[in-house]
Length: 141
Image 1 (spheres, rainbow, N blue to C red):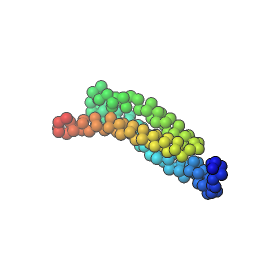
Image 2 (tube, helix red, strand yellow):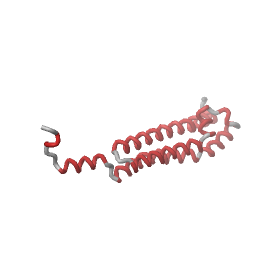
Image 3 (cartoon, rainbow, N blue to C red):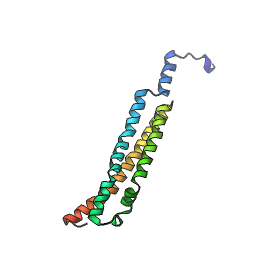
Image 4 (spheres, rainbow, N blue to C red):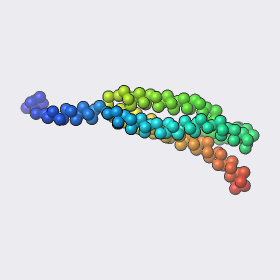
């Protein structure tokens, strides 16, 4: 019996279109999932000049800092621009894609990358600062 002869229910076609086309609420949840680590990264990177001043006051120069901290201090605005560009591209995919899978992949991948970047930036800034504070308190290195 050919496939065209099998009876299909009208509800099956409607449910298939609902699964393939994500709703606005699904897109909004996906965008919020991505926006949370973006906000965190933005807040941290906008405060980098204050950290730079603290390191200058405590060390006298930035040259004594680890390489990761130097990269973050020197290129914070480039990192911030890159994160926002990633977020804008992901938001375009989230809100203009017709497939649910692409929406969740864009949201999940961008949220994961932004969260990992946030952890690396936090560690790169806060670990040297904590080490300096311990040294000033006399607890060794």
